[in-house]
Length: 306
Image 1: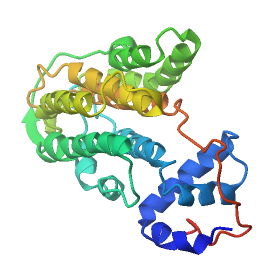
Image 2: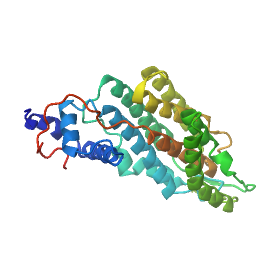
Image 3: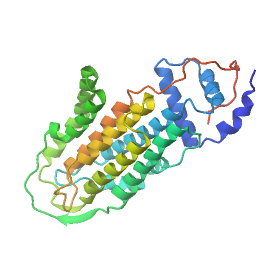
Image 4: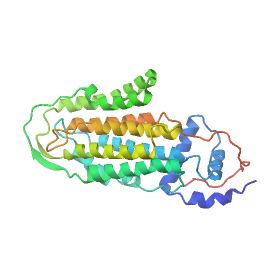
């Protein structure tokens, strides 16, 4: 029988964040009925040198990053149609959880997973540094006509993403669209209730929209090089979701955002990221399929228990 203690250095090399992330993956796979025995899973992971989880790991890193941005946007909704929330921009720069998500992986990645993680690293840096940190909130004072938004227009880019991913699967596409509409609908109504606001103050800079569009294009170019659109398997599925997301982020309009980023832009951005999370959640990347493995010890040790 293989001695599980030989895997201790591999396990102990994990950062607390990566250990927690792998726990999340394990929990998700168990709830999906994919594996019933944690010890079997962890022992298999160890004997495979984490090769079995590297794609799932990269998917989870993308998902956690996108979902955290959605949460920060929800925590700081636009004060009105005329401006996105400057606190949202501030949270994007200062949030501790978001900062942790930029850390390098502490588990080995195969070459294919590493290629996709390179894209994640580039996107993360663009979003935090070039899009938000680079654009300070700006003061202003304007008398403007009321701006009213329709739900369909706000979530159109997100719906385009869902169509690109789910294609002819009408049921899955409609379910995802309904979920998104239910989440974003009240936020659009709140925006319309404040169609003339704000008229002064310090709010998110309109340059954010331009830099977001540009960096989405740059990231998609890198993705097309690293993980081409015809890549098979789960890696290709994940890459296609990210590709569709980047395409739609690049298409969100950025004209007329002077001096402030418009409130509708924040909701468009939020809804595109949220639709990418919904799509990623439909991709089953784990757990291990039945393989020839050494006998599983009854107690493999304190694997991932921190």
